[in-house]
Image (cartoon, rainbow over all chains, first blue to last red; front, side, top):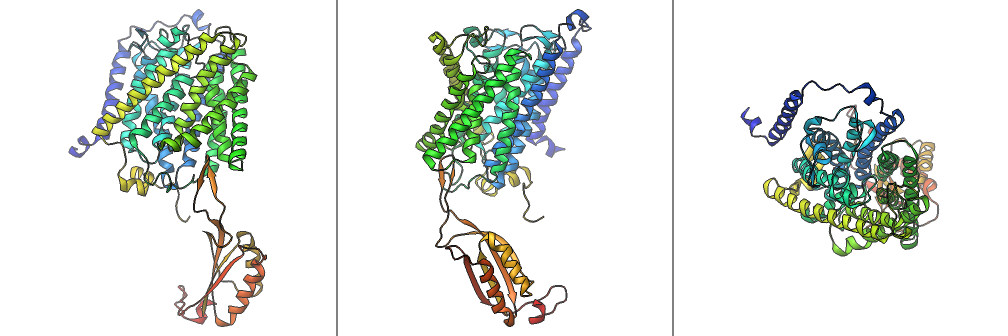
Length: 452
Length: 113
């Protein structure tokens, strides 16, 4: 028993149980829940709800897809560590989201900075629609759709510290990062009363909230953790590219829910998002393949899938505001910029962003947010705004401001959080453990056996 | 008794095994290996980063034979693996002092069988 009390995971789990108990008590306080009047429930649109729930499932599958995308790129001895980190996020962030994450992100606004705790434990988040966010679907459908975004965002970061982070610290970092970085930024951009939303910044499906946020946090992580042993010359190439291709393919598939679902309905806007998402991915994949062909004499599989994912990242904020031709330009632009960032800048500055989480998601996300300010047009979405190419240069500067604020906040807070955790728990696996591999040392399992 | 180690092109492996079979040489162990010789390797590129120390895929055959079978075995490998191009591989012939069949404990020539 004494041994259990001294074990950090025990206290980690105890905190989780404590919050669950509080949520139970809070929920019990509720005076007989006013059964929603049938007339209110009648506002639910079954088509919208069906699409949003389907989209939520599509976005969920992006996290295991990312696990295979990343997992194929690491060495054999670390594949399970990647799959485990992603799967752990699916579990841990879901609980964080239900207990207080959703409330901090979308709950009653406090000065435009963060949501209050009024929706702690999903209190007041029921099956009747919330007209502020999505008037035609049950509030819980919106909540669970958003939960999938909260899960994949910290998962994107792990590409930067892959193959060297201690698993216990990873768990604590992820919960804290979701709470003090993701939830506030999500509130700024999407929450009712959030200050960037009030500012008019356009972010249809999470270019700022998800990709810039995670991409910049990834850069901070790569800088704080330092390089893997042997980087750059003694690191083996990707151990299973077919896994990476499988992951990229499933990411593309899931992204239809990510962007298409962000219309929060199943009509014209969802169709536009679906169509431009596909186009941008195709244009970006093609562009990267051509760049490889021109500069490295061969087109590569890793290149084309990296480009396609970059295209999906870049079109994310723009998907509800640009037309198909704008999407092609966004796709071409993202591959050129990300290609330069991973082939030239990373080498020049010498940081070890192991799987290019910053190089693709950070750079691609920033390009996407800015490009939204260039190609957005009210012809696609009257609720949006015109961009620079449609006669409204002011929108570009609003986008620019949102990028700078998000990037600065994410970088500083992630940097400080990691430094604190390093002092308390240590961020990196021991030198010996890193050599042996995280699968065996962090999880006591092996991804592959030698025979049989 | 001799111990033969042959490094051949992977796509010639089936042919070599067929020729060995024709000469009634059944005992063989095959391993996929990486290597390089005068042919050199092909360097790989991942996200524009070139990988040094490139190697090519080869098949390694290990065959234990009694003295009567040394020449037939070598002939079989030469017939099966030769294409006339750089990179066809090598055969190494080693002396083998002892051989033991695990099932019966037999030693020497009868153990190879």
